[in-house]
Amino acid sequence: MKHPAPPVVVVGRDPEGGWLAAGVDEEGAAADPVHIPDQRLAAWIADVEAAVSPRWTVRSLRAFYPPLLAAGVRLRRAHDLLLCHAILRDTSSLDEPLPASTAWLREDPMPGADDRPALFELTVRDRRGDEEFAEILAEWRRQEEALARARDGRLALLCRAESTGALVAEEMTAAGLPWDRDVHERILVEELGPRPLRGGRPGAMARLAAEIGEHLGDPAVNPDSPPRLLRALHRAGVLVESTARWELARSDHPVVPPLLRYKKLARLFTANGWGWLDEWVVDGRFRPVYLTGGVVTGRWASAGGGALQIPRRLRPAVRADDGWMLVRADVAQLEPRVLAAMSGDRAMADAGRGSDLYDGVVRSGAVATREEAKYAVLGAMYGATTGESGRLVPRLRAVFPRAMGLVDEAARVGEDGGVVSTLLGRTSPRPDAGWRTAQSVASGPDAGGAEESRARSRARDRGRFTRNFVVQGTAAEWALLWLAEIRHRLLALPPASVPAPASGPVFAARAHLAFFLHDEVIVHTPAEHAEAAAAAVRDAAAAATARLFPGVEIDIPLDLRISRDAGKDP
Image (tube, helix red, strand yellow):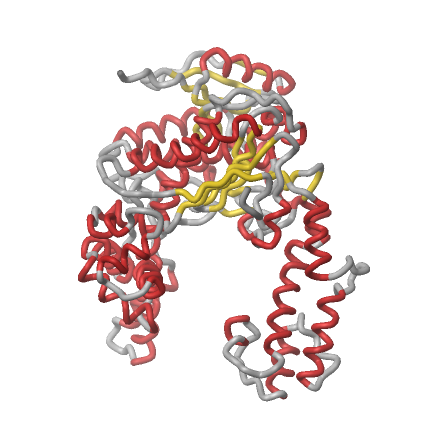
């Protein structure tokens, strides 16, 4: 039985101050808007949410949702016009995409920015610059008309998944990831030594720096300065072109082991040391800022805190509150499994039966060892043409022709300057002006060998990008659906008998998503509901697979654990 769609409520700024909100029917007709003063907005939304649970349509959930969560109000459904505008503006799945509009450009900070004041300024600017109610309503109608022109329901599913992802992102920031400061500090002391004075090196790094200086015959060398370090290496006969870890590892000079160890400790100290702990862990919670759709493929990014780059050494510091547990789940080889499903390659799907797709590739006879299988599959998705991957990829074409045909065609389209799309319709960016100029110059009558070589190289680079775009982007869509299904199922679990107040007013007594990284989630759950939360995560994966790949037999297995902390098994 088909259930009626939830009512739509459009909310935007009132030019006279406060807010305007109006329900919209299936034909797009809006009721007379209701004026809500700023101080009444949260209570008014809570009342309407409890009564009809509408699809709240707003310019940007990043600006709109956090104050509601802080006030104890949770939205079940929403439509983020800013995120969906970007999808519908760029998609090649519509004959007439949405026209570009400067009013609907995203103003995300660059991924990796760790400047909290800049982010706060962005949020204020978003609110002050929000289109008034009439423009928000008009944009919603434009988007609904665009989705009505789509050939099927995939773009609508993508927009709803993207908007639910935006809800999840703000909820995870509000709830925070439970973090044990004492455990984190103990790990830092074990690795680095006691906390140094401001501006100083930890003891372990200072000792390694002295050892590096001895090996290089330069006691004053600064391992933190790549130019000076490179000159010192050259004087010692270590003729590397950079100080990158992978390049240093190719040399057998005695300076290499302490230098690699130093670089590892320096990364821990600068990225997740005491300064990071002071800034980002407050009241037992790490609250990163997630950027939904922050990467062109649809993957998330983060702004500040390095949420997507937490080293495994620090995972024991991710620790559930008393009376609570963590449910941790990640997907084994998500992208190649997605490739098998979206291409309809039955042989690759069969290779993915069970927990290890690479073992299945070996069983198929394409390669001899698991290591070769990993090289070959990753090479196929990332366009490797040299080395071990380049040698093995042709074998996959014979055994998995449909999967390889899909990524090979995506690469050809990219090399020709075209665009490719994910399964649900997110479309790759078009070539930039520099790329087009290089191709034009190379095809001119006066082009020389250098111009032609440069153009071919740039074309191959773009082909590698589009080859991976279709797979990584579709895997990101699966992950969005997984998040949405987990969120939906956790809503049904009973409240906790032992609250976790640091998780905030919405999540102090409810199992909730606490962390997400591409193909991994962590749920913070009351201990008495841990098994039910684990079942919710597992069932959500099956539901996401059925939703994205209806009728396709494909295994997307989870490595799922229930434990007190994220660094060990229970």
